[in-house]
Length: 193
Image 1: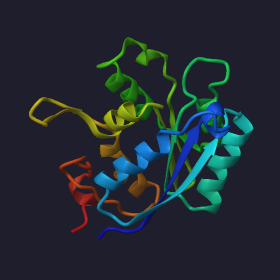
Image 2: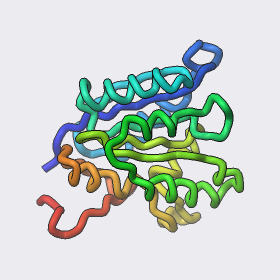
Image 3: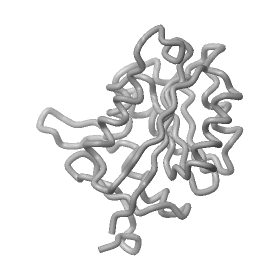
Image 4: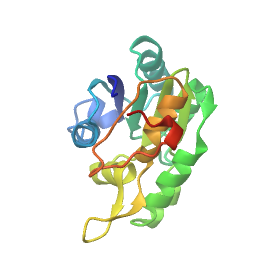
């Protein structure tokens, strides 16, 4: 019952967008999605500077013109003056989804006390879910997938477990995953066979 999903991946970094260093966010996201998704998918990628107007324009384009049901951003969520990803995301959203940011910070606190400095948010814009993720590849994976013990058992579920059902609720495609990577939660009535 899987349906094709177009996913927007946006890396927000002044230095990477200028070519000062190689972006690691988009490759990390593509690698994780390649392991996690069993539904057919394609991506629209953007590498942009930390400019609120550019971020807003990019998110609107991906949601409204490119029909991305899911848009994942990486970078620009700290307290520094140039970190404006949350402001841009909130500016383009129709509905804020505060549970995503709360849970991402809670997950990250297992590793670093500075997780409380992160200002990640998530919003719904039309039929698109936009989620701000951390900037480091390892943190991206842990946030999406969750935390595992030495035997590989999930001890803390990642935020991606809720994303497919959220996309169902806003009228997007039905997304399925490899349960060995991330087990999606849907109420029984919402599971398609």
